Length: 150
Image (cartoon, rainbow, N blue to C red; front, side):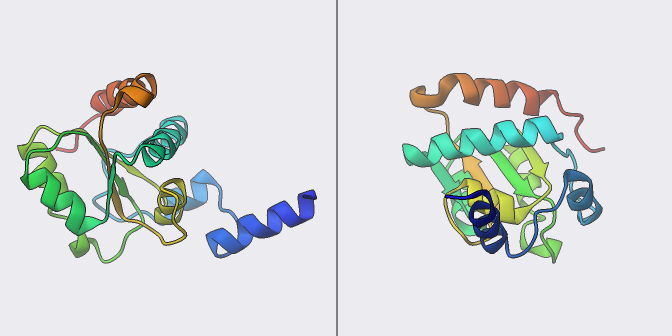
């Protein structure tokens, strides 16, 4: 596959040209705190890709909400550019009540692509598994060290 074709497929998948991290941050909603750094975002995307392979992932507001209520543990990853925020603004509170770590990444398109779907996804829960324990633990440690909103 030539470089031109590869770039074209990325543009088609993301629905346009790829945006830089700074451009994505400019489109964040007001509640997107704590925001993952560029480096942590990449680690979270890689961990999500590994979780998809062993089917240890919850995606979407309804599914994540249901399993938080059931007491399931994992890292919750939100897309920071989701509007209206009413769609998922109650889930961070549920995470804090259940002592679940959570973080925001800048793009719902990138979050959906890392989960193996072409649809943008606004929230994902990564469940722990032995297959990707090292990557999960590294992400968990960094997400836990992020400053929580006041």
